[in-house]
Image (cartoon, rainbow over all chains, first blue to last red; front, side, top):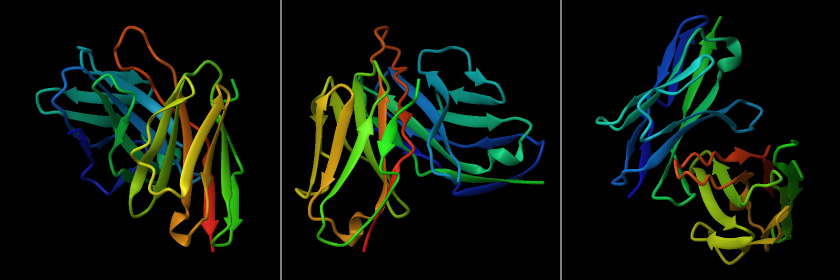
Length: 114
Length: 118
């Protein structure tokens, strides 16, 4: 069975500091993809970053990077130089098994303090 | 590209009424997904289509829910009759198949429809 776990319901970070949002996953598949989405208070789901299971390098997209540790089955999102606009819910998701179904975690609510 | 378009953005209805939610996927995308989001249950996949054909509807909660995709650019999710427990945000998302099988089929979400059933 596929499962995504986000153990941090809420987090605070000071503006301009870096923050790591945790995500662990469980799958028996060898090939899978990991995704992070941001959901601001306005409600839309915004795609941030993708990591493939066969990718040897950690994915990066601007201030977002994914700390992928395959042996530990973790795919943590790192946001550098936090901004007030980063305050939002963040969801980790996994796609496995060559089906197009996504499995989502329960989310982490990030608050950036000025 | 306009992104995934959903309508209406907000819907308030009374218990027992029929509700129809609409979605236009991103042009060229061949997968379409309907999700429901609540505080209690988080994001739930209701149903998804590939090339307009329903592939997995195991998440559809009851027979009161039905979804159709008559063509590549339009899908509906219907609730009949609606109940207060159906109150949620309903998202439509779309993606396209990536041939190299890296599973990089990112799903792009619409803005959602906030449904309130009184």
